[in-house]
Length: 60
Image 1: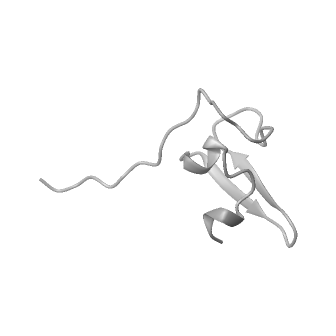
Image 2: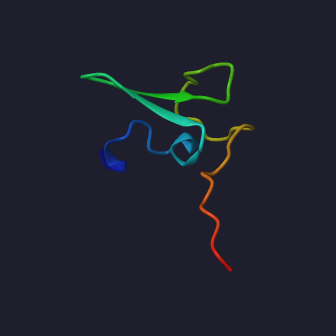
Image 3: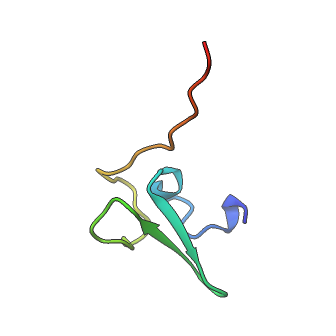
């Protein structure tokens, strides 16, 4: 699924390492593995638990 097809494209959740997409036949949900509220109201514009995905360490 491309980014344009994701729900709430303005949500910071899409750029967070804690995001897990949960898909059914007809819906896609944004599950957060860091918050007590597992399915926060969307779109999330600011989040204290936001962390960008970890990037692989580059050899020096």
